Image 1: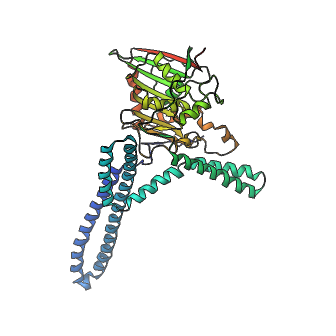
Image 2: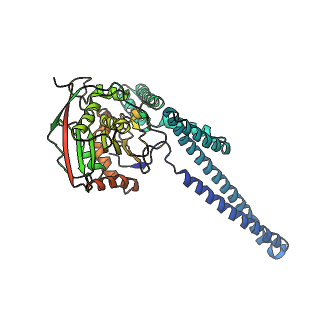
Image 3: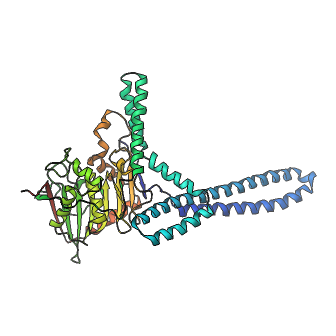
Length: 446
């Protein structure tokens, strides 16, 4: 299995534009120093040319050095200009994303403020806007490269059973379909949840039943792997709620929401493909209603501090909880989510995703700009680089696979991972921890 791990700030822009500009300034400063040396060398060179017999060779060497210094100065200027142009492009990508969000939210003041900044930036860098649009388009269309490669190789291998021409057709067809599907998801944007998004068609009845917990730990998680291990698995439970009573008497809650458990479309199990389709289309599902009911049954009330963890369908549920559940959602951790929510600056957002997970592809590459509070991050990894018929089992989407990636992130030493570990360290100071898991049925049980 692949072990290469990438931890980024999220979005299409994984670049620190401040550092780009500072680096450009250092190139300019170094270039100016070289230019000063060249001017001093020029004066010395004129003196040497005045003594051609004794200093002719030195004068020639000084001339060569002067030319190299001039070339180096020009190169430093070009690099500085390119760095500043790149910074402008990346800044425009983020500003364009902020502008769209402000328009969708109806925030006219924010729109006007962003327009002023964008106009000033484009005045200084006239070509940056087109390049920024191109960067966004490339992100939107070309981001599922690992899936496309594997699909192409799988199509080729399947077609090769019938000869070389069929192999070529199979590779091109399956790879092309994957590229088209990824582009459609990226351009459509259904997997990107804006701050103002709210689920419709609320109120589907569900029935909760507490069940014995398979994960009996009554202490806080210690890392992302620990979170993954607490996710409800193959048993009856679909939602796990932990209630932490802190030393000052306040309460915090953690909710763990399972991924899809039934391939049916409707029926008793609310964690099915009907709920998947409803959530992705922006409708409240029985699984979402059940998760809110489970939190309420465990004692959570609007305004309470919540740490939300979800896998797959569960990640869609927790994303909407963070956007509209009425809780003070401090932490949102998703594994293999088909959506990405712009949860704002009050929520630490952590997304763990495999680049060869087709469910993750439904998010269309996620937001162009990073989401969540400062310190939020995305963990990415190609789980299984090898292509073959085994890809049909979608192993990269399984919770066990994400637990492996979570363990790698925990051990990475990346300071951003320490941000979420600090959340768990704070929870470990609780004086009491209560845990309850719930089985759920669609309907009122009557």
